[in-house]
Length: 310
Image 1 (cartoon, rainbow, N blue to C red):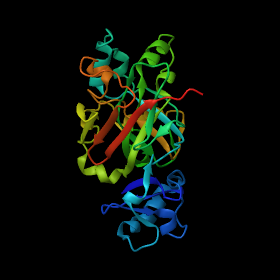
Image 2 (cartoon, rainbow, N blue to C red):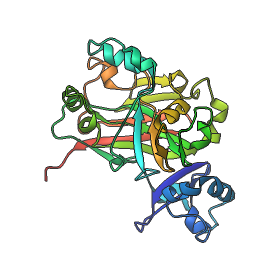
Image 3 (cartoon, helix red, strand yellow):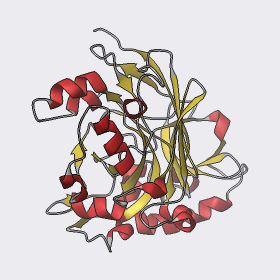
């Protein structure tokens, strides 16, 4: 199933299911209130709610709470997640990005999957504009996959971790590389290099939809990024070094994970300008249109704009 959050013409925001027929079912309205209005609440009882929502796949335009896709506006499927951790799980990206900065690969990277927390209140959705931070001249995209936690757990083993995943979506971890580089010299960060925006969407695909694409550590799904229609990045999630199970085991060590938290994979190989080099493409500027496309997960499109001075 594909879960979305959308805005109706009257400004009302609801969550629901996107059908193959390009119809959107308002899960709250279509079930007379039996299912929640918001996906964040749906995830609190995701197993039971998934069973109840499966019947929505049979709905047609003649049923209550059903809208043509072109009559609603898709927003971030989880507009305010409970948290956002981003990992660093693709070896090619880590190696190349470090080499471009004159740094060698560190052996500790192969010992533990590492992550940082970013701003879970800075989430953007499909077609949203991304303000370029005023002090940054090195704006970058990052082509990633995210998983959404659907069940509470603590000290979760990698063997059990899959049962805690609700689904997956595209993630763009926008990066102000100059702010990031300056801040991390102090030994902390990359907070101000990342906290201005993170895009997710256009929908969240439940994990069962990807099961037949499963590979050793990830899924055999292609990942692409375009800027102004030009293909810059091309990779595959199956090349991931640390699986989402590994990431969940690490994230939940001594910590309780809750439904509605997001975990990012880190950037796929070639998946950002930092890795490609500015001889391939300059840093992003206002007016640039960035499209991330991942098999089964859709296309996530955003336009860069000038930030406002207030």
